[in-house]
Length: 159
Image (cartoon, rainbow, N blue to C red; front, side):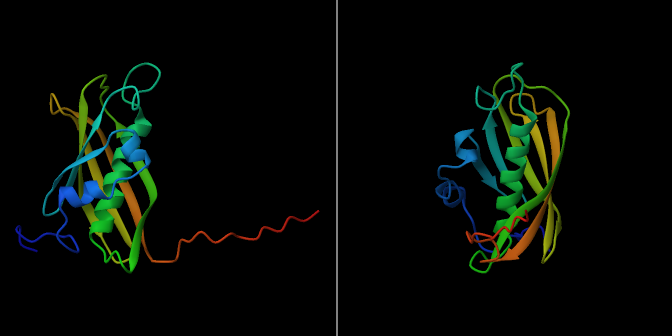
């Protein structure tokens, strides 16, 4: 792939991605998409009362939500959205540096983009200093539409 070719299934814009936002966790904690590159997706997240733990520093879970949001959306952007879904199946994170205020920036890049699985890495930095806060890796399963449904399963309990 040449450096000017994007890995995305179609041309996505920030306005389009922001238009997908609705009442979900990313919106609640203030995640905003800020840039789509040819092989990366970038978002910002505030460090505030919604994203800190009881001691006032960025919560590791919030960093994971930023990573999962970026990785899942990035994977979704590489597939035909009318035929497939991208769902996170494993996440791992290393929390490197504490942040108490401001914003963090997540930049998500692919490590592997396969037909059935993908692996995405998110580097999270403090916006004000550019210092690394965390690094995370997300494994995503690519499944056919309709595989995950709202069907109720029947559970049989033996007495």
